[in-house]
Length: 298
View (cartoon, rainbow, N blue to C red):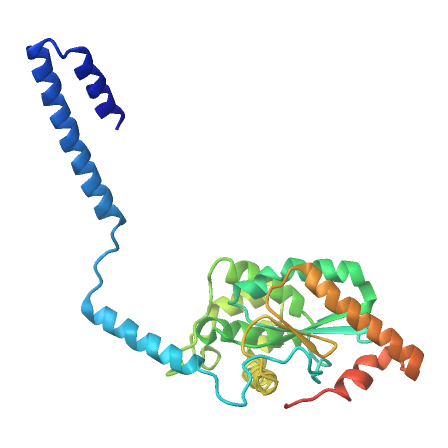
């Protein structure tokens, strides 16, 4: 456009010189042709690439299947009800904070889920703020089975050696961040039953200084633990990660820290009221007032 404007100005200044005017007209025509070609190229660059018909048909089929799966079934919820109190087992699982904490936050997570990873810093800040008033419990809920199953099984095996958090940090930093996973094929045997084994996850175990032979030995039993974890959480309609239960009340997603603080403060207030009004034992509050009163299968 700047070149064309210059040509117009030059044309106005040479209107009384036919030879020079002819040169200006020629240049203007050339500029106009170049602009036309540039416009055509820009249009081609912005146009989406052609998609083969067979790919389009497959996409349409997949979209139809997704729509069917997403269609709600009457009487069925696809996530926990935030108003409902749920009895989520916490004892026996990896935890940060004492079992006597007034607030227990159970986290359902997946080692290939970016939102579970994004929440790591929030959890660290919450532990600093609430100290011994907060216990964070970790439970597996695999939503990316091809890439996250083996890491989840490895986490259980690491917990049996009391080194879950050493393993957990490595699984996030060297697994998720580096996109390095042992894959699971539903049509094949799991890697921990094969001669080749699970090289990526075994590497996490070595880095965490675990007893590798014991780690390998525990993986088959841990695979059943992961299945049982998921079955229990599915019964209370967990369907995504991360899902949190803060003294039995659900909070879904990698929310800002202030939303966690609001929920934890409310749980603390309720716990203190129960201690004052009902003589609750602070050391067993979660078992007495959450597990005993919450539902396990709505």
